[in-house]
Length: 247
Image (cartoon, rainbow, N blue to C red):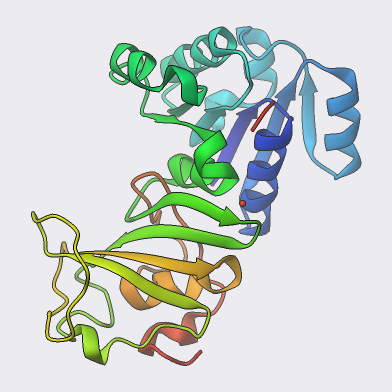
């Protein structure tokens, strides 16, 4: 997939890195010269200029992009970039600050495809929103530790298993479970895993791909998140138990 990211600050650059590591094409748009140099020094394609101007987005290839992530610290720039990208048929993701969460979400939720709060979700949350699908980042606990919510699909290898039969990687722990249409609760061993059920898992970033393959079971080329997604790096884990602020 191809992405355009507005802003090469901490959130934008980290998001670009995780997308590139999963084989996606990424172009950054950044006004600040020092940030442009830093991104280019990491071998990213960067268009230097204002991300709210259509000519700069066109130079970045917005007309060919699958999604645009407006991840600067400037809400006006982010919203303008999303509106331009929407005109070009892109999926649009807009960053807002945590302080503005309720008001801005209500005002803009219908105008963009997804609104994110990177101070809470970090780069993975931004990446997840860009990809779309059945895994959602809930919180960054530490640099390599993430809480995610996954939804069981028809393709999930563990569909039909019980909680007691579920084997996650050593660096992953099941925190909560909810039947489809019901609230999350502490999991009990005899609960069965069926399509639409939700599981909240605490996992090391290195095993998130394995966790997704076990609980979601989607192929590497499919988007995997309602805020987010992770591409397969070890499809062999499908049988279960073999085993990332400011602009």
